[in-house]
Length: 350
Image (cartoon, rainbow, N blue to C red; front, top):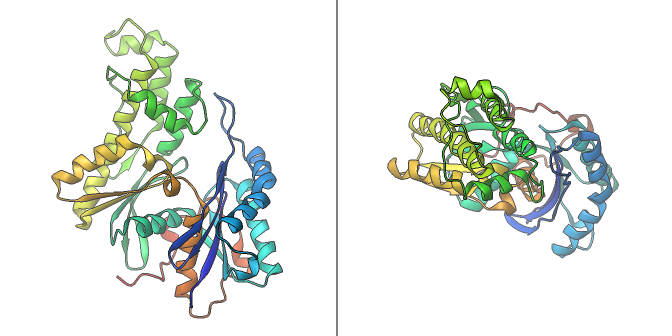
């Protein structure tokens, strides 16, 4: 019998509701909380945004999926974590309420595993090395013995957070996203600016790069002297965007290549919001071509946070549970620090 799962995602500034039936995406609407240029998004204001749009978004998801009532849904899935506390709680509260009203099972999903399972579904990747790059996470992951094992990760801030904070320094628009606007400016960059390159084994560090580029933007004279006064003129925003992207992505490609060699895989799956970046996909593709491997990438519909990815991961978890009872309410608490490798992957036997 077909299983219809609905997924609610709201761990950051995007809220999405997706409906999946046995691997087929029926609907996947999303709404983004956009702040003015130079500003980030605060948890409390983001939570209020999610509160204001979630019911309208639910109605839209049901209409697009041609489902008349939530009674026709088999399992309710939501992002358990990681993410921002207030937005997570808003979405979880709505899902708990609906699941009890319609007497349906409920599944709490790890946000990262939602990305991975959606990527596997859309690309058909079997057992890839996963590069998970977003505003809150940067991890190199591979599956082994019922766990998604983390081979390397950022030791400070995520790559998406680095890009977002850089965009705020330049007062770039947050519409549709800071990363997208950086990508467009980078295409016009002419000069590469040497930036710190910090790879430590399988881990990476981005905070020093951000601090360094900030000194360039504010015109720190001492920083110029430390670089032997190689430039006396100001850099263009396009050059800065180009240089930052090339440096960050080169670091990510390096640790991904190491993971490929260690695991012996011939596939790289890029997931998370930063994974939409075409330049990152190009650089990863060049490395994979040299290793006779392939890049499995998805577009912004599924790369950026969305409800369908939570529905897909929840579907897999629910389908693997022979009892079909889902989680108890006590188990549906949210966790801002929900590690990818903390989840037992019961639905895979390879």
